[in-house]
Image 1 (cartoon, rainbow, N blue to C red):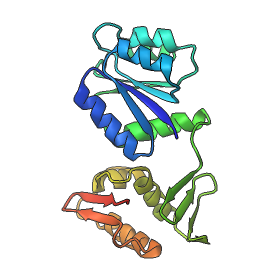
Image 2 (cartoon, rainbow, N blue to C red; image 1 turned 180 degrees about the vertical axis):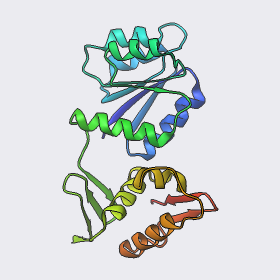
Image 3 (tube, rainbow, N blue to C red; image 1 turned 120 degrees about the horizontal axis):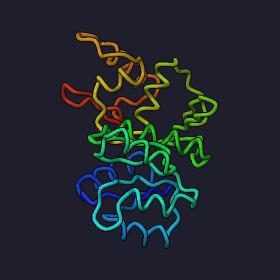
Image 4 (cartoon, one colour; image 1 turned 135 degrees about the vertical axis):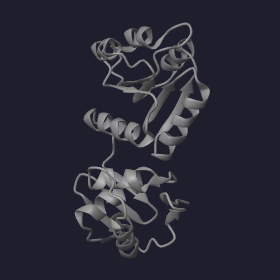
Length: 218
């Protein structure tokens, strides 16, 4: 299990991140100031840290200087949007710098990429009897391979990596097809219908009234 430390003095934001990253399959711990984060870093092993900058006591930049030699990937997630601040964070050794407000899907995607680069991410995703091998790009259900098109496979990955989260049609389109979501298109709906039929997931990928879809997991 991948362990992530979320450091943010705004509890609602920290808790939102924890909820989203937990649903993405990570084990998350929150710290609500720099001193609290230091104590947790000294007592526990973390695979990645999501770190705010503006906090009372020890701020994010100061904390980064302390942990930069610990070989823990750090992503700054902050409202400080000035270029100088971003450059400072990256020069201190952060893997990425994300400005608030953020999209949870974007945060999860960037975290996944960083974990994969550091060799910390497993190559398989399991959902009930379904096994997705992201390296081989294969999908097995009850041991039998399911033949999916590239778009269907990309759709499945989005749902599998964000279980329980409402995925907006616009977000799905942008992630799978790229570009701006065109009006009056049923592309997303038709591909999801085919995916559900191939997987027998009629009751697992649920429509969310007018806005999108959600993967229901037990």
